[in-house]
Structure formats: structure tokens, C-alpha cells
Image: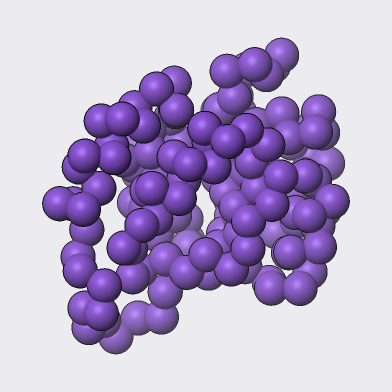
Length: 143
């Protein structure tokens, strides 16, 4: 599961990313993260630590915050925990005002329904590559 690799990822995160301040001609991908559980939020924050290609605009824990942040910040990609506030994926897409292919879903261990077939991130080590691919309009890297 997503949070299960947190300890392993914590050791590897600083070795796998370019140092902050590295030069790039592209603007960072602007994202909003919304997750109810602390372990998922921690995994996401660790995955994004020292990652200059991704700019975290806002982080929340509720579907209401998702709607507010998406209206206020107009992110390119949204990372959302499955089963957020028991809202369906369609309801979350409606409040995010983003197309389906711009929303990445992190599976939840306690969710009653299976994760969607597309744009699911199972491993925090893959999060950045998924965000970059989705922002460029490409398919999920594993598709």
C-alpha cells in the first residue's frame, strides 16, 4: 500500500531528486494535495521534498478544501486520497473543476470501493513521475 513504503522512501528521497535550485527552463507543475489520513499526507510531502519540478500550492483534508483550493489556485494537477470524505470520484472531479486525466488518486487502505483503473499512484516513489506525466498531458507512466 502507499503508506507502507514510507520508511524505505524516507531514506531514498534525498538521493533520487535533483538539488533544489537546479536550473530548468520549465515552470514547476502546480499541484493541490488533499488527503484525510496523516500517513498519506506524510508520504506525499516526503515524495515532494526537495523536488523543484513540482510546486505544492495547498494541502487539505476535506472535499470542501479541495473545491476551495482548486477555485483559488487553479492547479495543473490534483492529488487526492481515494474515499475522501466518502465522496465518489465523480463528485470530487466536479468540485475540482479539472478533467479526469488531471486528477491522481492515492488508494486508501480503508476505502470500501476498489481504486479507479486510471491515474492511480500506488507507490510514493512514483508520485513525481506521475505528476509530471499527467501535467504534460501524457498517460499514467504505467499505462
